[in-house]
Length: 613
Image 1 (cartoon, one colour):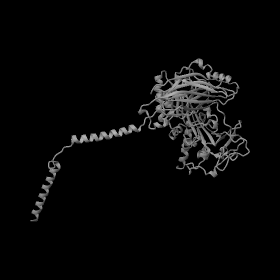
Image 2: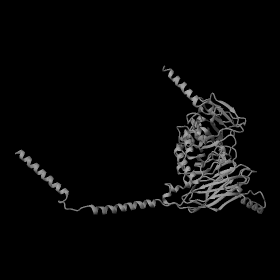
Image 3: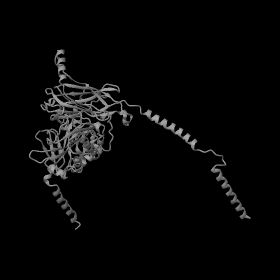
Image 4: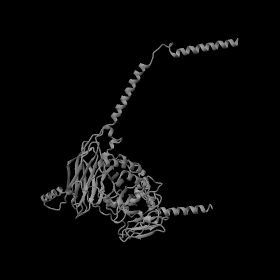
């Protein structure tokens, strides 16, 4: 009988699983890992998890694969659509090319949050926004509760809903950012708990905090939106994405050598084909041809698949030319896609997937795919000097030789950066193709006047809200545009400075939304409140570090110490004078006690003498 108990328990669990999770429900959850080698010994790993839940079951409390903890927050806060980003590092567009997912799953450094809330008035929207940020702060172990009015804006043309919403629904868009937030392992753990299989099975077993946060660039994204296919029931879709760029050399470092140590000079891999190569000059080799395995990069292979995932979706895909050889473990099915640049691998729930990309042959023409050129390059920096005024310069470069780029540039600045809108200027660097300087200068003036097409500006209020600036502009083909403006720095109260005041204050990254060609041409006539056209590409600039006038906090410390010492000495002396009593030595309580002790001793001596007699 005891031998039959485990078997009966197995049958009972199998029966319950077939009742609660039927085979047709597996199509409601998808997960996939895409690997793409990049130049300079880099590897892009994109994890994507997507699940759907019908609205009828969601409203009744049957969340199925949708996380209940997050679903109850959305219901309580009246959230129709939600987008949350945790990002760290900088994407090197010059070396790595276009961003994954066309930048749609990317955020600026720190934490970004924007959501469409069902509200009729601004006060109602602010109250629901406060409820949402505080609840998400506890769920994801982040400082989202610090997104107050000074860090919240209402974008007008930079964002548009990704889901399907009814036309008569009253929704308001709110956007908040925390550029100073440090993303770490305590944010990854709640992220994994939202998955149906957690991190116990499937591609999520590769997600380790030591590997993720050792990456050169990483971004965690959560997108929740309603999807209403034609003729079908509306579903609420949650999509969780993790993108990271790993350094292959650093990831392959053995565990017994956690601290990277430089190689000796005679062991450095140098490019000897350079004419300036010598015994004291070394130009590094491109390590793109280096071999690697999943166990070397992530520390472990893929442990099977999630039983709830759709079996028709391959769990792992690799983007390398079909001419390269790829070795996989036993019982793994490989399928090369017709595009000739990618292949996918199918495994069973009990099979471990180990993948190895060997070093290509020396005669191979291509070892990795050429990165796709992005639609726009952008970099931003501070200009000027001093502690009173400064400026911001954004360099926007269009690499296309024959197509212009139209986009929306949005800045969310803190209230202590008071910008001068009349100083905003956009000028283009025209190539010297004409021999006539006069004609070239007149052409440059005409282009400069037509760069900025629309401006939406909402000034800041001291300690109440920040500055919101949205500019709709364009960059001509094969041109570089310089967008500049000046600002003035405010002086804070001494209680408003953080403990590391001399480090500076973080300024959020600028959000650039590139519009699809031919879309939204009537935006200027529609007014500033019109929604932007469909976005073709998104990117964020790097965040900035603004240095404000900072007092010498050592002087208040010295004043406090000196004042406290003086008060202690003065108070102690006066207290002693007022409280202490001066009496003669024989009148004090100690003198009376001494007399009593002496009499007692005399009696004891007399009694002792009487006993001896």
